[in-house]
Length: 246
Image (cartoon, rainbow, N blue to C red; front, top):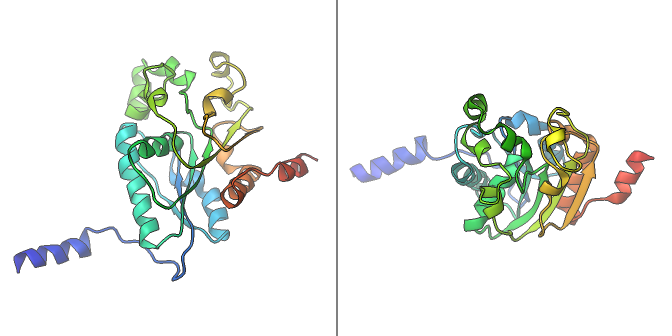
C-alpha cells in the first residue's frame, strides 16, 4: 500500500507535465539555443515553426553550468519526452552554436527511431579559435563554464572526437563578423566566433552561408525561412535566397 502511494505521489508531483496539442500525429521540433543564451533567443524560430504546424519544444537549459556530455543527456531527453508525450510522427532539431554540439554528442551513443532533419546555425563543429584564445582566462571560465572549455580546436578536444551522425543535416553559418575584434584570430571567412570551415561536417546534406554574425543569425527572417525549407524538403532554397537579394 505504501509503495502504491509513493508511486501515485511521484506521478502527480514529480513526473514532467506537458501540454497535449493534437490528437493526430505532428512532427516535433526540438530547439536548442547557444552558449550563455536563453530560449528567448530562439523565439522567432519557435513562432515560425508553430505557425508551420509543428510541435515545438524550446526551453532554456543551463548552458554555462555543465559539460557538453551532461547537458546533451539531460536537455535532449527532456525535449524527446515532450515529443513522445505528443506522439510526434518525427523529431527534428534546430540548433544555434553549442546546441548543435549537444545533438552530435547525444547521437554518438543514442538512437532516435523517428529522427527527422537537423538544422544547425553557426555550429563550432571543429571548435572555435575564440575558445582557444580565451580558455585560460579565469573570467571566461567563470562566466561561460565547463562547456566553453570544450569548444577549442585542438585535435584531442571533444569536437574532433565526435564521429559522424546519421540523419539529414543542414548547416547555415554567417560570413559577417558580429565580433570583429575576434576575426583576426579566425582563419578564413567567419561570423565573429566560428569559421565557415569549422561549421562544416562531412555528412551534411546541405550548407549555406549568409551575411550574418554569430550573435543574431537565429533572428534573421531569411535564415528562418531556410530553416523551414530544410525541415520540409531536406535542402535549402537557392531560389528564395536569390529573390531576397534581387
